[in-house]
Length: 83
Image (cartoon, rainbow, N blue to C red; front, side):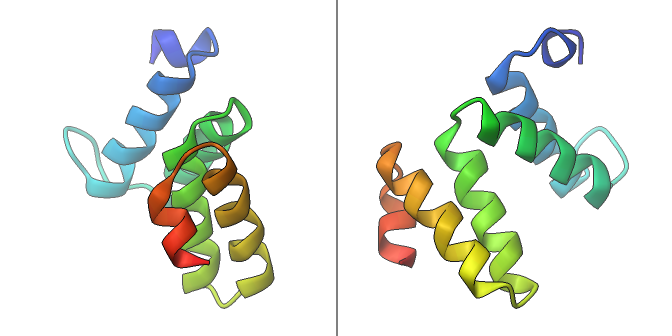
C-alpha cells in the first residue's frame, strides 16, 4: 500500500486484484474500483480492461467500449477482442 500511496501504477493494479479476489484482504468492491481507476489513469492496460468489464457487467456498454478501446490502444489484446 505504501507504493500505491506514492502513485505506483502496478501497486494500484495489484491492490485492485487483491480486493477483487479477497486474497489476504476482505473483498471490497469500492476499494477494488478505486485502485483500478488509479492504475488505469496511470496507463495500466489491464486495469483499464477490468474497468471495461465492470462497466459491461453493470450494463453501461458505452462506457465499457470506451475503456476497451483505450486498453486496446495501450496494447491489451483481450480488450481488442472484447470490442
